[in-house]
Length: 100
Image 1 (spheres, rainbow, N blue to C red):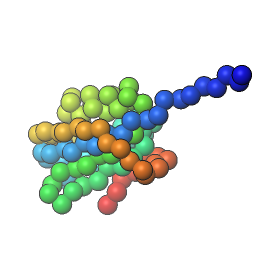
Image 2 (spheres, rainbow, N blue to C red; image 1 turned 180 degrees about the horizontal axis):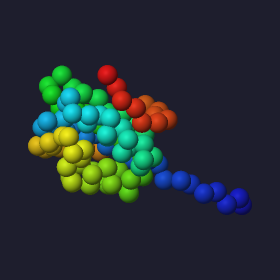
Image 3 (cartoon, rainbow, N blue to C red; image 1 turned 30 degrees about the horizontal axis):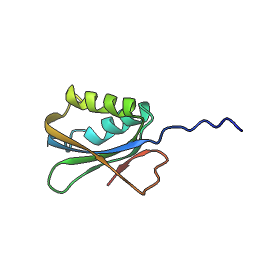
Image 4 (cartoon, helix red, strand yellow; image 1 turned 90 degrees about the horizontal axis):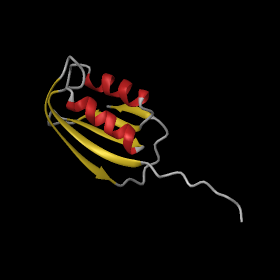
């Protein structure tokens, strides 16, 4: 019987961030942080002034992204609140991008 290693599937989370998070480089810094953590997904501004992050990867890496937001995120931003929820996606992400 062959020995097969099954890698755990990545989790995906949606994060909605409010506060002073647009026009302060938030997407760029989030993009850099997510790439450093080897996450996939995207970050984009929403019409209501919030920023949406869809991020996928190992739970440990996702927790590091959440901790970064908890610590205030980029210096130029002021995060008032962020909400995290686990999501399912049929989308196949190969990297992390900024959406417009």
